[in-house]
Image 1: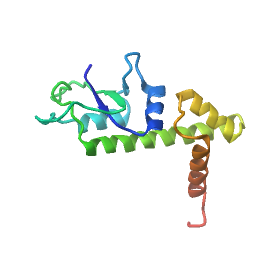
Image 2 (image 1 turned 90 degrees about the vertical axis):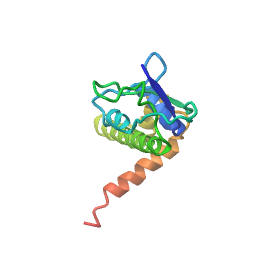
Image 3 (image 1 turned 120 degrees about the vertical axis):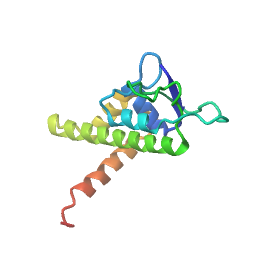
Image 4 (image 1 turned 30 degrees about the vertical axis):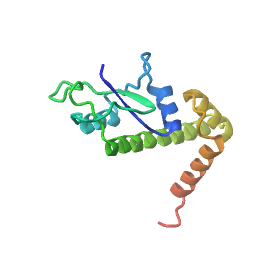
Length: 149
């Protein structure tokens, strides 16, 4: 297994660790996810004088049957890493909102309890409960505001 390291926001790292971390302590995305294919498309040959990868997350590189073998194509540029971080952030917020919506409609639990359960489920400590609740309320107001139609 070939891996590379990237740097992302701490709460996204915790989310990935809680959801996709393998027993070998690296993040392994299933091949059915868009991010798996995005990482595959963004990998390139490592430049000659490029330092060893540094970052807070170690990601297993995709290994499809193709011409792009991970042992050769194992470099993610700074711009590629930003794209990957953006996709992970979209995944995080989408998963969070879905968890809250489902919890509210299914169990009728309070936002505070659902946010606490979400943070506990994925081991997220680096973003506050208030920040998550505020994000949810901003999103809900933006998506449920029908005055602009």
